[in-house]
Length: 444
Image 1 (tube, rainbow, N blue to C red):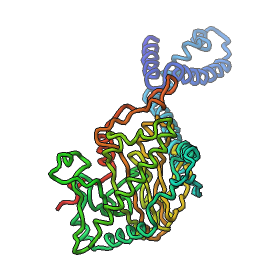
Image 2: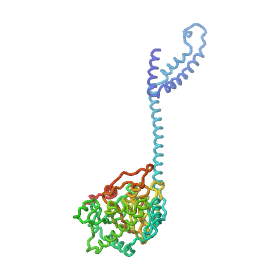
Image 3: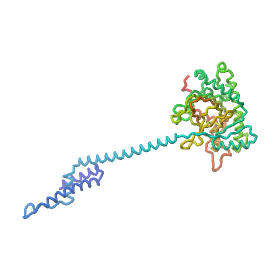
């Protein structure tokens, strides 16, 4: 009996460890105890003692505790119980793993659906306000411009004083340069001051959605500063790079004249913007603003390749411009799209129709910072239909040392400044490094 009890206790310990605790141990024990009780009771009932004999000393059916002990000792193999416990644990683990796997698959599916939804796009066309610089009623121009700046950050400008004949000449000269062999164009490759030629894929504006880079080539022309001038030591000042006069005679003169005319138009537009922000009309004419601007002309050529947003192929990836405003002149090939709400799901992209003889003007990041997000620097991109496209962008930024910070008329106790102050040159350097290829990648 003692041996039986010892073995039973030992088995209970084994069962507790390997068979998920006391409940399993009792379950196994009672199951076999019941079986043994039934057998012993059946045998006892078949014996009818008629006289005193050794059979009188045979005890009746064992107590439940003894049956429990006997059943554990006689019918239950501790090793078998160990195997059963381990098998049960494996089954439970397998079930948990299957549940986790299903949850992972479901989560992965939901994430994929979210990405598909985010990339799903609705394309349509938009209508922009048109501001005439010859409009005698300045209040009308201010109202139209302010509405455009609040709603989309894009508008048309007409009657700007640059003749259509001269605009066509600028486009013609631009095409002549891009028609040159690549070896000739690489002779005026973009330098550390971002002057000169930029080849295909040099710019990657939307790395999250583009597979290569922009399917465009360009040419930067900044404010011409002689090399010996102390101003040339500033990051975005210095002499421009020019194609040889033997190859493109008169090319430089045309581009310098256009640069001068575009700056004049930009300053006129800036005066209307100042009034729309409840500032003096000459606010942006100060020396630290547009008195000594970082104004950059950029010729652009998009190759004849159809864009495919679903595959990450764009003429120009989605981006916002860096500076104060941008003047854009285009040929008659549609391609520019704007997204008025970058956080919308799905995003709505609207085509902006070209305007012959006019400029498409958009606000840049610095004006958004100045206005504390009252005026918007809108996300835009170029999506092409397979036709070759030419455009001319003119980026207007303030002077190198200009501190871009929230304007007094654009902040209050309930609307504090959203951005820290930053100098123009520091902000531009950061943005150029983020979006342009490292010059060392081109070798010699």
